[in-house]
Amino acid sequence: MKGVKHYTEDGEYKGETHKMPGNKVHTGKKHSDDSKPVSHKPGGPFKMRTPFQCWEKYKQEGYKKKEGRTVPNCVPK
Image 1 (tube, rainbow, N blue to C red):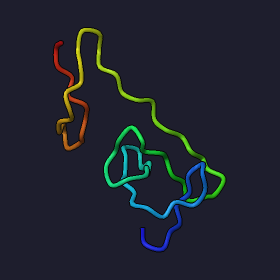
Image 2 (image 1 turned 30 degrees about the vertical axis):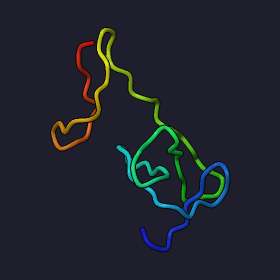
Image 3 (image 1 turned 180 degrees about the horizontal axis):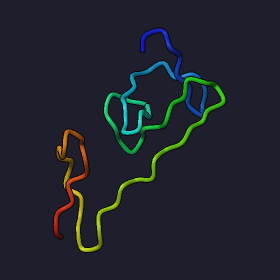
Image 4 (image 1 turned 135 degrees about the vertical axis):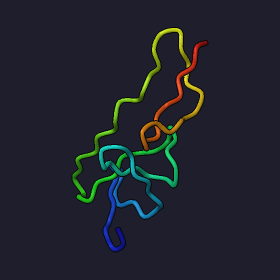
């Protein structure tokens, strides 16, 4: 949203953001390991989602579309 300030645990964030599932907003144009959750309030909440892990004997190879959502692509090792 234009004109809305974003904050991380480090203070005001003026860079690009991207949406995550559940209407969460994170730093950066695309999600990466360096992405941080942002809030519209200086005090938070700043809750990062638990990273997705594939089942045992499977590994993640990028993402895929499933029912209109982007989900991890887990393939056998």
